Image (cartoon, rainbow, N blue to C red; front, side, top):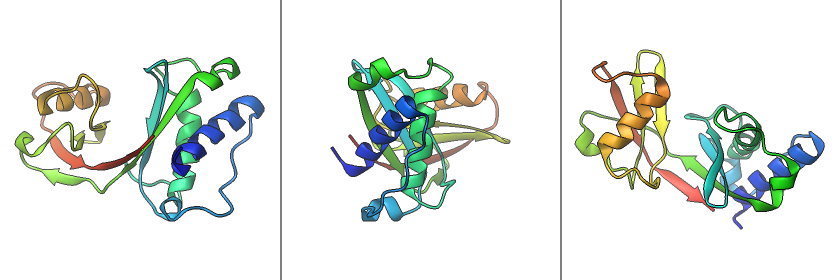
Length: 168
């Protein structure tokens, strides 16, 4: 298991079993020291169980982002009840480290397999990660990200794409 994913797993287990936050690793790998937005996804039996992340870095490094987002994915995803200790052995984790978003002028510049998308209208933003099962077109990707942000069809939007490094 990649060290970023191990950090997410250890963080969730420590928080769920003891209510304590994980400490930063004493000897972090180079990737943990960088700054970037991250998403932590948790699945159980192949089905999403929680996914929370940050568009841009909000802490001093990726390790801190993962710790914060792992706890949130396990306990604060409004789509799911908080993870409980009886589920811990059944959970699978992945961590996405987001690249810098770049503005695009046309949906033709999007590719749902290669790029995630951010849809922005005013102060509302919706994000969808790349390479998600069932999302096969840029239009679907934009529609889902818009819905997440409460942006309705016909509103003026700005589009941004970004790449991720996905660790499982």
